Image (tube, rainbow, N blue to C red; front, top):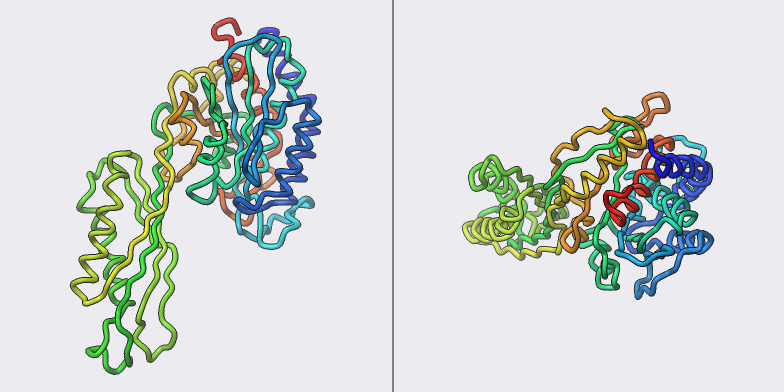
Length: 397
């Protein structure tokens, strides 16, 4: 390990206890998408204490900050999400959520602590920064269309030459990271459908148009889109996650509301899905004498990691922690609006291992028992610092 990597690692270890305190406060005070007011206030106070410059932001939640080095140069960015999920925590941790029905069950509290730690370490290294490091604290990753677009509209990516993001991963052991070049996560297309039939008595179905039966036929047909209309080597998933309809056992439902999501690992396939879903809904309803109202919501594009950014992460993690500690991230149909930033500058999101069976940190994301090994903070912080400096100075690191 060279002197600079050694310095970064030493600083990351020195800030670890403070990061744990930041993380535990954030874990105890989770807030849902676009409602992260107290979180934003806490982040603003912390960032100011580190001597960073706050950038103007015409948003109620979220934060943009930057650190200018002693020498002029390009701008590199790192991003963390800040929102939590509507999940009641059941971990039993002494620092568990104090907000009923709300929990950091996807690790965004860890992400914030890592990026704050990177800001702390780099703020002590201004003389070694040939350019600017921008810190993006983004609201509403969990709720498409998400918080990335409004932040971009507020200048988050102005002048950025490269961007890095992270996501803790309970399937990867602490001390390791996951990387994958190219497409890594799926495009997300959310939709609502209202099927309008004609209500009636359960004993006289011939006098009515049953919205529930029509909805059931439509749900089955959606899987035919996946099985028979999409290239089988192009993974796709279409899921109906919520159904609302009916009022009594002896009344034929007049209308049914469905909420669903579609995922694809190809931009081309993603562009085809809305028209196929809408066509299927309209055709089945027409055949049954019903009507369909279909609404699509702006979702997330495919997340496409740039090989150059991944190589920066790869070589710096190996320099910091030794070889043989990088695994290949699998393709997944989950979505991430970090993909929005990657449409504007090369960059990459790495998976930060946080699995530790000894402390019960084995549960998947979005579980009420999700836990993350806090020792992962050092690994993520040191890597982001080294990658940011490397992207600014190139081969001289």
